[in-house]
Length: 60
Image (cartoon, rainbow, N blue to C red; front, side):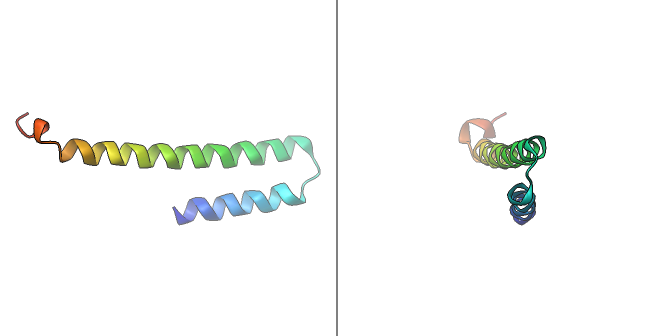
């Protein structure tokens, strides 16, 4: 997660300094994608952990 935070901070730095609409839009969209990917990874890890520890799955 540290890599994500660093990337988001770097994108924010570019976003703050840019006056170009297209570049600002791209930086913001990239930040949003990184955050969404991190959220989905966390959800999938939780789902995997829940499946592994589910007694119903032990007999399969």
